Image (cartoon, rainbow, N blue to C red; front, side, top):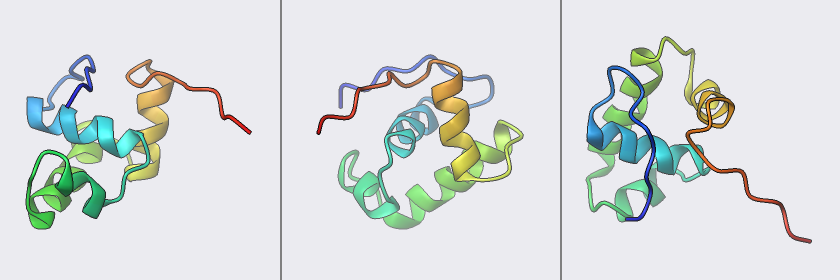
Length: 78
């Protein structure tokens, strides 16, 4: 898949993979298409990630990912 992120404490390698896609703004449907997972599995991982990182929700997880350098920032092209 080409997404490489350091593993935050407590996350499995699959959760890190899902976290990378989540942080890039992908919906659950888009996430399950890439690693070929069921939507229920993706939903389970998306729920577990913020819990394991003591974050309130997926928005806070994305903020965490960018704030901790887990996702590279790309300039917005016009």
